[in-house]
Length: 104
Image 1 (cartoon, rainbow, N blue to C red):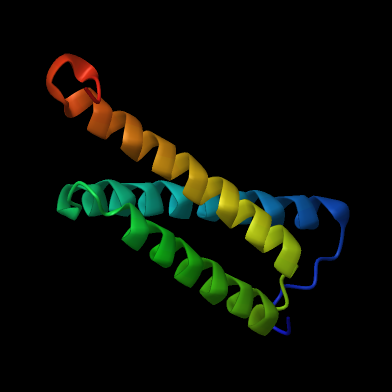
Image 2: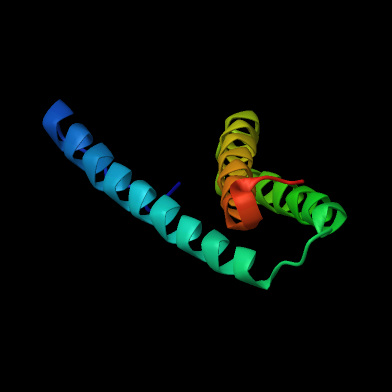
C-alpha cells in the first residue's frame, strides 16, 4: 500500500496501529447498527434470502481483500465470524419478541 505512513520508530508503528484499531472498532459498531436496522425490514421466512446475502457479502469482501492487498483468508474468517455473531443476535432478538419468548 503506497499510502501507508512510513514510521520512523516502534512507537510510531504502535500509534498508527492504535489509530487503526479505533477506526476498525468504530466501523464494526456502525455496521452493527445497520444490521439492527436491516432486521426491522425482514419478514419471517427470509432465511433463504439471508444465505444469499451472506454469500454475496463474502464474495465482495474476498474480492476487496485481493484489491487492497489484505490477507483473503483472514478477511473471510473475520467476516464469517462477524456475520455469524450478528445473525445470532438478530435471531435472539426475534425470539424474544415472540409471545412468551419462544418459537412455539
